[in-house]
Length: 79
Image 1 (cartoon, helix red, strand yellow):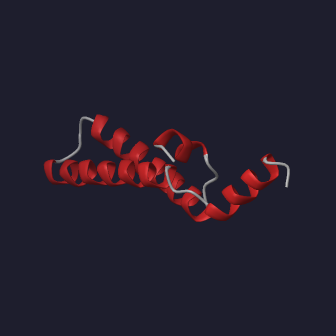
Image 2 (cartoon, helix red, strand yellow):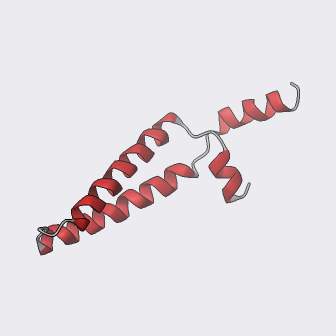
């Protein structure tokens, strides 16, 4: 299974929630990075949070629910 097939495959609900959390973290970090009044230490923390959010989204995107995928493939094959 290649990356594109994994991204199109069903995702477990837990990882859907993690993907949403990653999106929120990355978006909030982007807003804070874009602000002019962010202090140096806070800016460094925000950069790390943005990176963590992006990684969380990427990992959650390619996580596959094997059981749901098996049912989907079983239905597709006419079973």
